[in-house]
Image (cartoon, rainbow, N blue to C red; front, side):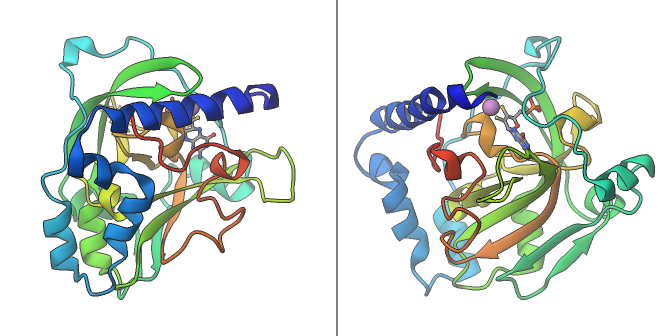
Length: 260
Ligand SMILES: Nc1nc2c(c(=O)[nH]1)N[C@H]1C(S)=C(S)[C@@H](COP(=O)(O)O)O[C@H]1N2
Ligand SMILES: [Mo]
């Protein structure tokens, strides 16, 4: 991704979000607008149970048949984090990997890959990945629904966003920090197709696609799908994190809500 592409990519992302909401009418449209979504999930009186009720019945992203899967699934952005701690985990088959879940939760979690595979339900889905650079690929993803992880971590009532901290450093400039990160709201966090994938196309998630664990948030554009996820942080606001816009690319001008 070159710097020159940035303004164009930002425009496309913003256009895609507008197009997505233009297809919906009335209340749907309201609940799709980023500001209304924030308002809807910000009521501090919402309990976890009412959050779940509110968030159920959301539209699903299209799922595809196995024969529609792309023969080659492109990799984009980071394809091999250079971080020495990551390299050590990779060399060790991720035996020492732990997914940390913290911030505004009552039960902070630290979960190994075997725990993620064995202690939680698994979900598989064949979906299309759309990158703002103008390419799409269809692949199969297997992982643990984020909603099940959050049920165990017990979100605090004032938590409104989940931030995904990644292992890779894009190393472009230093003022904002160059580690990849992303964030989603509770609508996407509890959506049934939002999973942390450890498998791709019936094999362990390959390094170039984000091993050992990457986010799939199927109603959003490619850059929201954080690869190399090390830590999930529940927060009330994104403004104190890094550039304050909720993601590595968002801090550089992309839309935070990248709905397809
Ligand atoms: N950690 C991390 N996640 C990332 C990126 C990245 O550079 N680093 N690139 C994003 C972009 S722009 C896209 S299109 C997808 C690419 O996922 P893929 O490599 O599995 O195709 O990952 C997204 N998630
Ligand atoms: Mo992308």
